[in-house]
Length: 119
Image 1 (cartoon, rainbow, N blue to C red):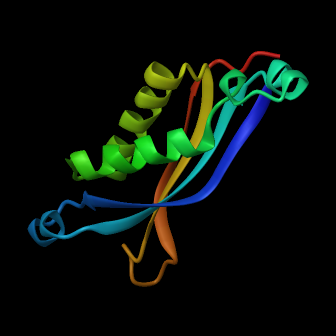
Image 2 (tube, rainbow, N blue to C red; image 1 turned 180 degrees about the vertical axis):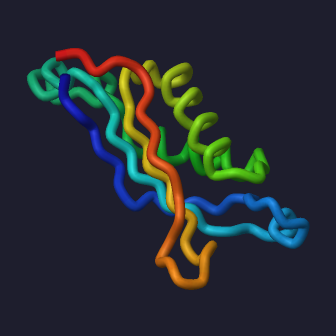
């Protein structure tokens, strides 16, 4: 299985456990590794035969605008489910970072892996 990458995707979201956080948008940074067989896309030079980076990025942006959660874990899990259901991603590794959440850290976040990575 090949891997399609989207790294450093900046998304605006309402996220946080504190009441004031539920009133503002905060930046999330997303790194994605998406399992996909790119053989046919490479052979035929056809976008429809692979994962469309722009479509995925746009959909995740709209997802963040449409939802609000307290936890990074919830955003990560829901985005993983979205990618599997809407884009047919069989395996993924998703890293979600929340910059500035802890004063002494560049960012905090979670990394999850879902599905089966087939050879």
